Amino acid sequence: MGNTGRKGLSLARRLYTSRVLGLVLGLLCVSVSMYSLDPPLWVWALMLFNGLVWPHLAYQLARRARVPFHAEHRNLLIDAFFGGFWVAAMHFNPLPAATTISMMAMNNVAIGGLRFLLAGSAAQLLGVGVGLVVFAPAFIPQTTPAQMYACFPLLLLYPLALGWICFRQAYTLGVHKRELLALSRTDSLTGLLNHGAWKDQLEIAFQRCIRQKQGAAIALIDIDHFKAINDTYGHVAGDIVLRQLSKMLKQNLRATDVAGRYGGDEFCVILPELPLFNAAQAMEALRERFATLGYEQNPALKVSLSIGLAAYDPAHPDATRWLSDADQALYEAKASGRNRVICNCDSLPKQPLLGLGVR
Image: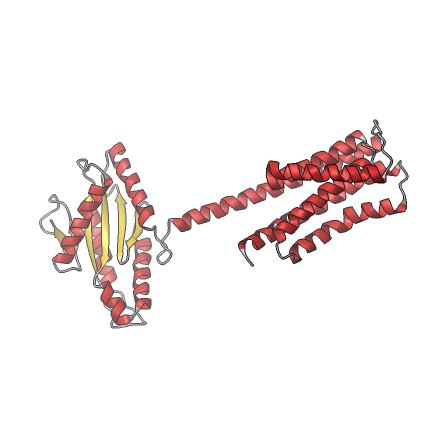
């Protein structure tokens, strides 16, 4: 079933509850108003059909239709037609007629906006015209207490139910929107931020450093000889390595750190409010831990990381220059033998940690 079909079934399910409630309450309003007019038996039968049978029949017709969305719109026009018909049948008794018309109008606006309000109004006018042909044209200017009280449930309960349905729909749409936004910003394989989303976070971090005059570091992480891993052990093994690294990043970074997949076998991390030396220690620990991983599927598989680090520098004109420094450090880590951490800074101690390089 296509997207239109699913939307049509969803619309039919949402309208089923409101139609059942609205037509049952409408039956109470119309039947009390019609009672004093002593209508023939077929009118009572039509009222019972419209109030008790039609909601379920309309739902089944929409469910079984080839295009449920179009079928439900037709059902709504039939609802409006019946509403106009009963307005004429009640001889335009002010309160029951106004209640019926306003509830129909509110329903049509909630479903389809102004366009469907106009279509529903046209269907109501058609129903009024048929009602004037079937029943003698007349006008009853007074509403009895019984008729007034019979209108109250429809006036009070139906708007509440329709409002709740609209709220639930808006809430569901909001959830879906947030989920889609998250998916659009997340790498599907690793669950980390994708390239674009991480770059957005880098710009935010850069601006925060400027405003708050605080330090930060960024790291670019490359899995050494990743193409060889794919060629030798297969892409499934390569995906396992990527997921394992993303898992380690999630488990070992601080809550304030921001990790992403920069592309292919390259990952990236923003480390806010962390001096470069401490950031280097954290990355070195990650490198050592990752190198000792064992893979049950391929015991012979050995992996290592090359990592380039750069600290925020107030002299950076923009975040791109900051990222470029980290990229240069990563290049040097790979060019000098891989499996090491290189920092693009001259201010670190000259006796670095094992595997840690200083430029």
